[in-house]
Image 1 (tube, helix red, strand yellow):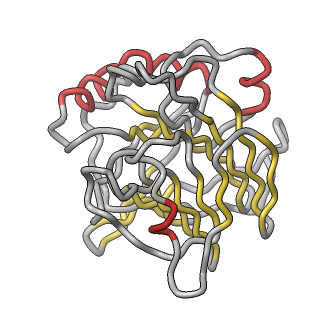
Image 2 (cartoon, rainbow, N blue to C red):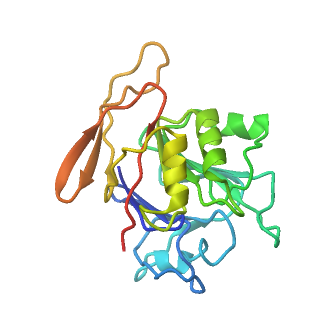
Amino acid sequence: MIITYHGGQFIKITQGDTVIGVNPFGKQSIMKPIRFAARIGLVSMNHPILNGVENLSHGDKVPFVISGAGEYEIGGVAVSGFLSPKPVGEAGLLNTIYTIELDGIRLCVLGALASTELSPEIIEGIGEVDILFVPISGEDVLSPAEAGKISVMLDAKIIIPVDFESTSDKQLKAFLKEAGAEDVVAVDKLTLKQCVSKSPSSQRCCYQPWLLSYGGGVGTCTLHPLSQVLFVNHRQ
């Protein structure tokens, strides 16, 4: 599995021939449009910076678009959507949290989450998370401190902050300080490999070290028993 971060909350997830585009930039976004063909498109909130599913089509390839709560299964990919309890911003926009189950790896995209107060039902539905994408910009979404709190709450193996402008962004620095990960190195993309053995204590897959591909080289990251904070450079 390869994860690429394009800035904002725009994420590309690739597993073999399956491509998932999450919260792509829309036509009215101030961000530069990025186009690629995707099998699945996820939209957390109907806002120009998150709803550009038209940029996930190429030729006769059109994605299956998910833009709200529910249970979905597309080509062996299981997606669950959970409506956030608190509307976002003055417009009161609705945000959807997604989990994605792909090749034995469970990802959780919090989208434009505005509060750490999740109901027991939502937490149970999210379940055990391998990779968590958490917004950190503050204002209408989680602040760095709140992002750190919910990362601990959901107990993800890997945490990837999103919704920051650059590696010098003060919100990013605050989040990394909150997480005790100020020395983390940015990478161009995240490549994940999974072993086939099972952990006898939990029956969840026992993971090999994550391989972090950057600059043509490969870095190896061993998971911390609780979580590992990583962040990925914007890719244009």
